[in-house]
Image (cartoon, rainbow, N blue to C red; front, top):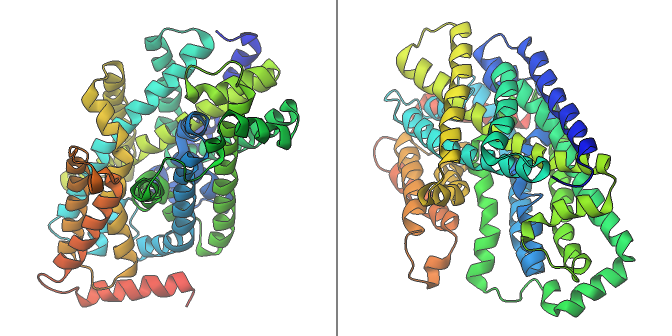
Amino acid sequence: MVEGSMPIIITFIVYLVGMIALGLIAYKMTDNLSDYVLGGRRLGAGVAALSAGASDMSSWLLLGLPGALYAAGLVEAWIAIGLAVGAIINWMFVAGRLRSYTEIANDSITLPDFFENRFKDKSKSLRIVSAVLILIFFTFYTSSGLVGGAVLFESTFGLDQSTALWVGAVIIIAYTFLGGFLAVSWTDFVQGILMFLALIVIPIFAIVDFGGVGPTFDTIRSIDPANLSLFEGVGFIGIVSLLGWGLGYFGQPHIIVRFMAIRSMKELPKAQGIGITWVILSMTGAVFTGLVGIAYFADAPLDNPETVFLEFTQVLFHPIVAGVLLAAVLAAIMSTIDSQLLVSSSALAEDFYKGMIRPKASQKELVMVGRIGVLAVAVVALILAQNPDATVLELVSYAWAGLGATFGPLILFSLFWKRMTRNGALAGMISGGLTVLIWVQIEAGGIFDLYELVSGFIVSSIMIIVFSYIGAPPTEEMEADFESARKMHKGI
């Protein structure tokens, strides 16, 4: 348990109670399945933007990225650059088109729902395959996040891992179960603010405490000049692989569902500005946190590089402030898990239960199925988290790549290419996911050192084009919907 832990405990309790309160408020505003899985399409610009950022980054932004910079220097910033570029492109070119097209396509409220309506797929193959892949990837993703939350509780409060795992899980499950999408978005909004402030405050305070920008960077350079080089020890394949992380943005359901939920197209420019600003400044803060740590902890190097953010909270701030900053780490973990739980439950309720079992189910029944889905996915994730094995950890490590290659090209071509067909969509989705799964098993070096997301993205794109020209072309109804969505997006 960290020094001065009582103020930290009090801060955590206040924070967690606040999250539950938001869940209860959202519960009273949830009347149907659209409310539960998409908030009734009534998110304002700020909530949509910050909740998208928070659900995206998870604890990686506060622990993983600063740790990578602390361990290897500025060369690790390529991944931050790639992600920042991907997020900006996502906001500028995908958000508006997806918002308009999902409304035109029979008011689709989930991605599998959109795929089926976009391509008029009466076979339901697109809905089934995409929903299954979402459930698989997100169950493992959620398991990984629960483990991260347990580590935080364990190291902060001295709880045993099992108890810590359940404490974190119960809180997240409670407000997601109660309030659905609105609760998740509102809590993610608060959590996004916490993460942003933490990443801005810590490097500034650390630099000031060390004596200023000059002494800090002189020390970093004196330890190893390579610490401040973007190109030290990395070749072309390495740079492309790190930048390639940005391709994953286009296929992450828990992120792009926020675009679908924006109140109106009029809110989009404001949301774009907030979202892009948040990403750039937060990434910059994370990079500087790791770099400054090289100088700050030079006399007593950290055993675990990924604790550099946590160490700064304890040496720079009063326990109450440290509690708030540690809550930001918990916020990062919670904001991703709750979104993944909700996307998974929506796949169960909308895409399996309503789509395959009871098409005429009442809205009240569907909301209850969605809530049961949250519990079901969470229970499986908890079991996996308590019994981790190499296969689970390996799948989690490339889940971002799997989702990005499976859904990224599919989303982009769906929105921008009128000639795309159901055959192309199905071939692209399956080939992208399979390429990722196979690519990581090949250890031949050379081109096979390329990040599997990049190779999967390329293969999926090729298959979409090839198979869209095999079989019947798009129907007149599909083309009419495409033009209607384009006009709505442009405000015609």
